[in-house]
Length: 231
Image: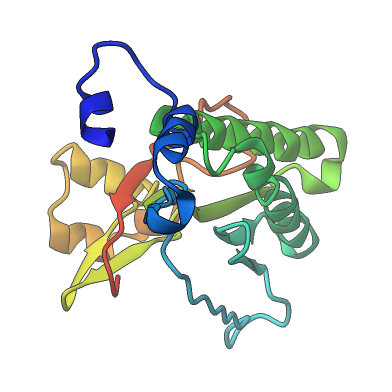
């Protein structure tokens, strides 16, 4: 009966078909196969940890970490612009970017939607921090670097501004996922410096992009990595 029904040209309702079969065959003598509901693809399990120290020269810690395995977003910021300003900038960056999961539907979001949401969130955080520098003179050099990883489905979306880095470790190999936004890196990309020169160049500490820059930004480049077991 099921085979014959499946060969019909018109669509059929499974429950209606099953009811008609029961009319012809007593239910107790008929083995019934139940159709299991379709399950969404399994999402990767995450183990996360964070550690940050101020270093040997500073008494305050301008770094901030945010890890939320449930919302699947991870952030690291590093404030720039002086003690009070840098701490405030890194805190604002975390506060604004950590709300990103609310704007992305875990089930319905596609790659374009996720990338667009990330770039928009970075642009808004940049404008907010830049506005503080304009309104309060003591914060005129305020800014923050940031690197972010956001997991949506099986894709890891990585973005950053400044010189914080994200790495992927896979099969014993280490791959840098982000690009430094320093003047040394810019000169290296343009062929003015060699790798060895760029690694010792004092401009490697001078940033050309960061949150709080006076120039409006459209958002960073976003790298998408399809995760594999044990990454």
